Length: 308
Length: 238
Image 1 (spheres, rainbow over the protein chains, first blue to last red):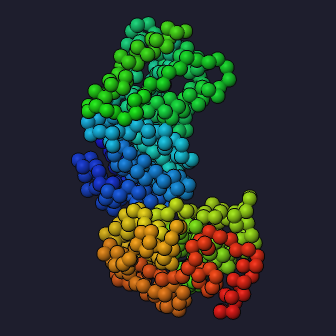
Image 2: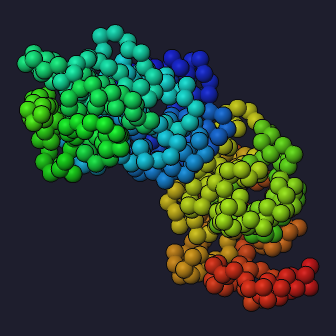
Image 3: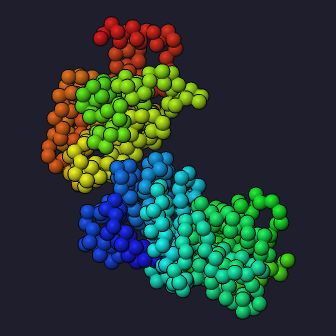
């Protein structure tokens, strides 16, 4: 996904000299072609994320479109107040990018697990929050962020995420992509859970359950209409995120459902419930520990539907 | 700090009250946003907004917040209030100006207290490394921070040496000697290829005998009588 991001940014930077990429000393084996091609549009700010974000705001207020890049929590939580005060309050064109969403850096430990970022960044005024579901969405999201005037957060996976969309979908910030349609159940994925949800939808369909699958790549502004329609047109809703169950995709959807008039729909938030991971493991291992496998989604979906 | 602002806005900063967003303007960032009363006063004197606005400072429904706020206030470059933010933003503006070949300068006023913040030194390291000689820092070194004297809370001395070791060209001045402040600021950059730092030695509440170097006056609003006494004392001295 980070390769899709940097390739898209390279194309954009060629056309738009305002685009500047700042990194907090990360991007080995990813940024080299960008640096070689656009040395004046790249700067390694060193391991100093607070300063990087303030610098980005200052450059953005001078007319640049500035991307800040680091791993997981380093480009977000480490410099949260700079994002809030310097970027968001000034409506600055700062695009915060984190790589390694959720448990992607599994064995590196909790410092490198990004499990609260969606909840926290979503709470900031003026902020747009995007978590693309596959490399195609990551490239489209990068283009959309440049077109959007104002602060944004782009939550990327790491590398090797499979392509989900067979064809390039119509991508617009704030509008969910309907990957498949059905009426028994709506599965809502965001970011790195899209592939698992896609596979779960296929299994459920094979069992005779008709599934609407939404890729909710934009967490803020949320596609409220898509959520309301899911509640109206399908019989149950499950959200799946590689993120804490507090305040992320599930929280955002719950806010809509709880405040909607009309029929109540059975609803489940799937995500990380255990807080910090206490065992070492790869991303796949930890996702299994957290109950985020394809089979977990199928089991939870069936349980929810059977309650009807 | 009032003396520093007076010199800056009397002839150092190239700004235009009639066109506050003029692209070639010098940028001034008051990183010590809590001292915005002085900045608002100077901006209104320079005609950025009517002096009547000052009456709304801190008031319900007013325009002027208790920390420097850019929204709807001409001449305030960026909002500040949380310490340790201004210098990074200033670095970004100075860097952008250099990349785009613009000639304006970026000035940033720091408090001594915010030199406790790690982010201030991240920015200092960055500016020194990149040799941002279009950037000027002024430290209002009044030696008092929120809960006491800097030497007791977290001693900053030797402060000028710290900036120099971060590859800044630093000078120390009497922060109440307006002629010296003016002469000093006319000479930036002090060294080509280095950002400039002016350590301004100041006395908090300067000129009002009962306020000078008193922690209480970091917080307190003068009563009508105290205000009258302070103004009378300042007028006698001027």
